[in-house]
Length: 358
Image (cartoon, rainbow, N blue to C red; front, side, top):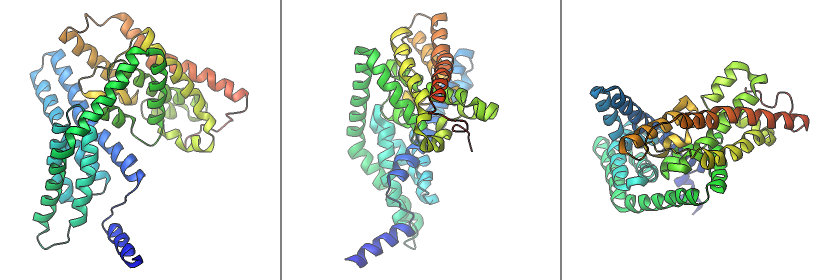
């Protein structure tokens, strides 16, 4: 019995199959978000620009990128799992089918199915003399077969859960504004993908606006409150990069997380109750979990405005809309986090150098 266990462990190690929360919940999920960004989200941005500028070429380019989102996500997941080339390339069809059959919950379906297909493909890779046939066949058959079986129910469940959050935010904008803003913001700073989570549950609408507020509070908050230690380089790398850079400091002193998290608890309900900030980006909820990273969150909100105006859901983009976007995404996170941080410094909870980036 012990010998069989050791043999299995040796096989998994040789195949680089690591069954762990980090590999699947962090590496694969983060890669999926990047794949979604590089296809569906960037495609939507290019398409919207083309429509606004009257350039059909950009509209076509954006649509092509948009249509390949399932394949892009699956290949990104395979790359994160260190799949062999034949497995990696075979995941294109797997991702396309899972995303198409998963509907609104397509990204979540792609995540589960691409992981299983990739690991099965890795298990048989280079085990036979006809590897060029066996490996792609196993990867595609397992992946597309699973997509046909479980992608629709996964999509239905993800859509229902996401809709529950969105409906709850409409019914209780104050409390849900706090909950969504804080949780998504915390997810952004943690080594998991907030964009992937928002995309998986199609977190759009008012809930998407609260998610944007939470992410911006973390990124802009950490960038401003650590300016003394990190200067301009830290301001840029955290403000339009990622607040995840602060994770080592959070581990050493969890109290440094208090200012941006409290800021998100304040900006979230302001976004939902005062400005009614909504994320209606047609590219699903991925932009909801991006915050100020490359200004993707703000571009996503603007894209949603443009789409709503085009469909008649919104009369026009007003000055009040722009004011709300500026306050929620930049001004309030900066001011609130800095003020709260000063209080924490006076209490001795945050000391000199606690926010210094390595």
